[in-house]
Picture 1 (tube, rainbow, N blue to C red):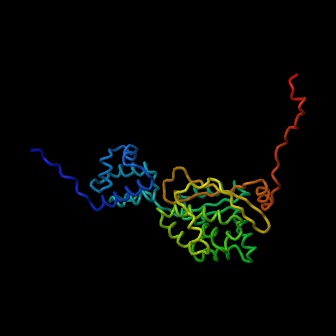
Picture 2: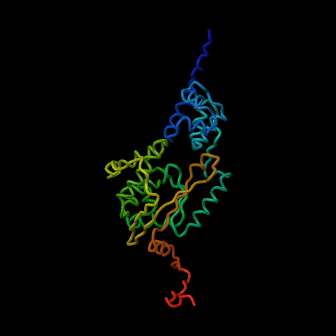
Picture 3: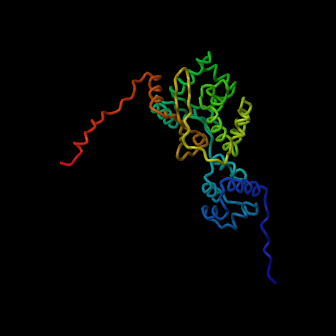
Length: 304
């Protein structure tokens, strides 16, 4: 008579971790086999981990997190769920040991002048901004008959200065966007995607949905749709037409939660007129092109 091998018993920690693992894998549309191969374990072992019948070692947990490209905050959550201590620290951006990070960010913002650039966190709270960004917001405030600080207070109340709120609030920059219908849908689509696995983004989305027109715009949002990588926002501020598109960049290998959360949003002119306007607002002379060779006549192009 063959002995029957009992199945491993589930544990509370194993169940919590297994649920998080299964949810992360499903959100990224990875099969068990694909993830198992990437992380270097068997599909059966992965199945046991997801069901809570097997408890991961810390090294295995971190290998799975790496294979799923999990953020550091989510890795900490996994460690806690599996009964381990978190290993990634959260430090204030003002901390003394964050000086190299602050200096690197400030250098990036300065070098992007006279075009707007800013540092934001994952919830779109403004951390740093260059002079060009401040000029745009100051112009909007002046046209609204108020100061820059008063405009921020009107848009964000007592909360942190938030670029999503400044962009979508009816008293913020949205009033100066010519193609607002298109831009609002794009912003809501991105925010809805981020809200799926980031509670602060979910709370931010809930807040902005109370703004006029947001619920109607949200009906046109498809979180599964692939957005165009380049969408020029057409601002008209004080008679100035500015068409700008944005790019986001992040630190390549962050080792703490603060650095991982930071993104640099740089805005670029979408046409020559917008570039000239931004340079003029900064008091710069228009950019000049290098001299071009004079066109040759057809006869000069004939072989001798």
